[in-house]
Image (cartoon, rainbow, N blue to C red; front, side, top):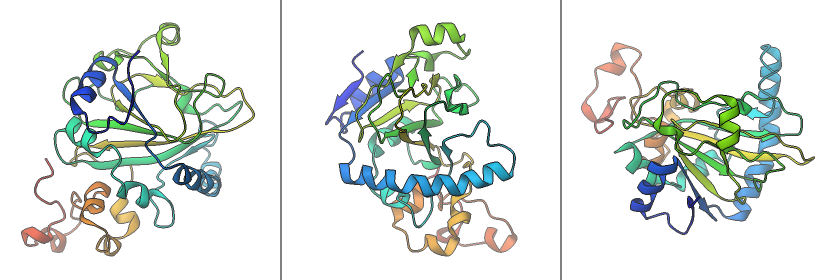
Length: 267
């Protein structure tokens, strides 16, 4: 399957061809190796903090190794988003401006039973040719058959019905990718994390980008603070969602155009 590319980040024609046919594409050597290591080092304490909340709220069983909403001032996420990885492809796929819907990670460990191992797609409603969401996976450890490389049922982004599990695992491809790679895939694509049969963790970042009018999984501007947004670059304000907020009262609603919470150009 010819969906593995290197140094082709600006070839949107090739991106169109591969995404249309397979639903996913690999860009190798996308991240600096030291940045990959920095991200990996930050995941364990972030996971421990989230794990306590999962346990306290009684939802830990299926959340093993999953970290949600890593958009925090002290973490790597703002530095990552500043780099605009995949920006031409995301903007092209969504036909305009976009925002971050979610940014999380998976630490796939031996004997994990996390929900990401279920066959699923990342958008609940099949949207066909109308694209609302694109996924990004950042490979932090080499993905191998032994450590649970993700299954992708190539071409399944063009069909609505969920495939039977037997068919899925008999026909799905495996995302065998080196650390530092980025995988972009259509949110309609059926996929599943593999099982890790090694003693080492298999880590990856998982992100979703959407058209700006879609609700974020977490209100990142409110979480980070509206005042904090004033210190960000225009690009970061856009992708984190500061230009597509919803006013909560009349003071926020009745504002001149340049101060409105939902800015122009967010279609």
